Length: 99
Image (cartoon, rainbow, N blue to C red; front, side, top):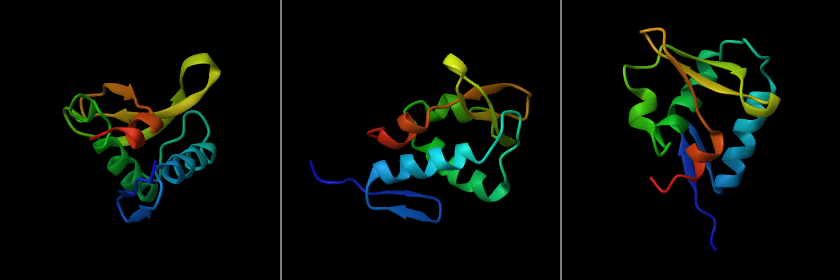
C-alpha cells in the first residue's frame, strides 16, 4: 500500500505514520496537567479537524489543549472548550481517519 501524505497546519508528512510519531513525541514532552503551547496547539487543531468525530469534539469551540490521564494509566491530549467541558481525542484516529 502506498504511503499517504498528510498536512497538519504548517507541517507536511509524506507518511501518516510519521505524523503519528511526531504527535506521540509531542505528547511525551508534556506532563499530566500541562497546557499545550500555542505553537503545538496549531498542529493539534489540524489533527483534530481530521478526526472522524471532529464535529462533536470541536462543538462549541476549542479554548486550549491540555494533557491529562487516559485509559490504562496512559496520558493523552484533551480538548478544553469555552463552556468548561473537556474531551479526550485519539492521535491515531486523527491521523488515520479516511476523512
